[in-house]
Image (cartoon, rainbow, N blue to C red; front, side, top):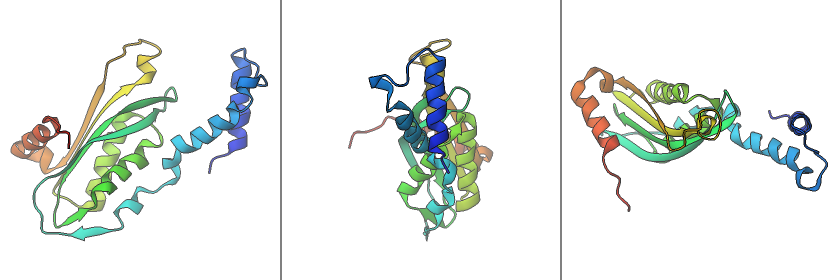
Amino acid sequence: MVDYKKIEAAVRDILIAVGEDPDREGLVGTPDRVARMYAELFRGLSEDPKIHTKKIFHEDYNEIVLLKDIPFCSTCEHHLMPFIGKAHIAYLPEGSVVGVSKLARILETFARRPQIQERMTNQIADFLIENLKPKGVAVVLEASHSCMTVRGVQKSGSSMVTSALRGIFIRDQRSRSEILSLIHSQQRNY
């Protein structure tokens, strides 16, 4: 549960600490806006991703299911700055499939928490293995981290790629090559 009043007080203190006047016209509503923003950015802390796998369909489909280029935004837990990118989530069903939008919702649940990209990649892969029981899972995240593009080393245009392979995608080289080539194939505009 978000404590809006504590966030507002903390933001007010930060504004004072950096030499600003939190009572000047442009900043009067800032503590409230920041509190509402944090509630939105961190809503995944109070959401159980299992709500997105309550409805699983039994289907005799034994080929790769891949949802590519899913946009996401998360918050780096080290600097509380955003990292923004796209995710590619795939699985090889073992008699069950999930609605395609559920993959994006699962991503969103894990992204809307203070995070690091490496952990988030593993969390999504492990969650799918545990809850869908597929033959394999592949998750690849590509993101630009504002904690290193607008501060610190300031290397704009850089992106970080993380992957998590489970099941057949880690054990079988052919399956691994197939999923990675599908993920990296050119996208089409539909």
